[in-house]
Image (tube, rainbow, N blue to C red; front, side):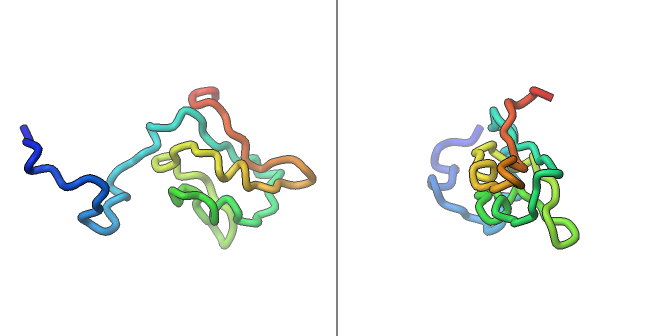
Length: 96
């Protein structure tokens, strides 16, 4: 068992790039769902995602990386959609 003296100090990243080792997708209660036909490929979701969970493919929008998406909903909030229809909607986890 680890004692408190062996733990790293809080809020300190000791190894750069180590966030890829810790999947945070299980924290989420809502998840973003991409509706392709409403997407204008503006990439605002990619710009605003704090977890880099919006992936790119062929110089455009790709799928979500649900291993790291915490379900904050910023992507859905910033999505302009097409003709007033959002390309990203938040759904309760496990709804599908």
